[in-house]
Image (cartoon, rainbow, N blue to C red):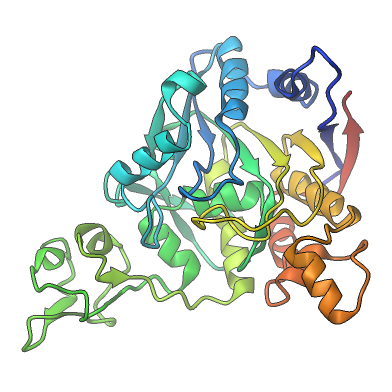
Length: 376
């Protein structure tokens, strides 16, 4: 693949001009008008933020994107899939409550929220992965696959398992259903916790493989040999007694994220925006956030999510670390200056972010080589 262009605008605004006006100008310069939105259902893939976390993107950004798509004739909606972990977004009802609590309502963004994988995270579509090495198919939330166009609006930050979270992470991991997230995090087979199981047997009614059996104490156990990893038992359990085993290596996880992104975007137009502000060390899935590790940098946009993420990584690593952050604390402990280095590698040494970019390039998702164009 050749070098593509990534467009960038900083956070500076002169008196009388909003950052949202700069965002709209950035989208136009980055080529969003090249996409035919006329009467097309457009999924704006976003992370609504776990309640308690304050680093997630403000809904004002989403409104600016939705307004531009609507001006181009599109039919935008905001979307995300349910989480695999237990929290405030692990079913559609809680997920919508969390989105509203964090300000994502039709009144603030001008478009509807749709939880892509349904009420319990089981409404998915099995999609082929072109050039997939780890995954031959991916299980993607149905509403995302029903869309004609995918636009990702991403908060760029660190991530404890992937190294960083940007467009690839938001699209790949975020578009996976419960079963898809299991496939990315391990071999896709859940386990039951006898301490939480009430013996109600509802999970067994949803298992088509007969893989759920009960012991003498009426506690559920999942026969791993018979389980096919569909994830329906997780959605069926109202007591959070069934969960994923979380045993994939970080490198395999990064590669699967790239492959799931490939499945989501393959054959459809896409456009991607990374907002690099409040660059927290960990994911917005936490119900808290630590201090930013670098100063706010700006907004990046483009048609290639791989180039986009690489440009943001380079920008973060070129920025001075903030002393009053976990990055500064680590540098002080090691007796190193809080200067220019591999910031994400310093914070999460067990997670090599490069594996995500490398594998995305390998499967033809993008090039990782870019020309940065500044938009005033």
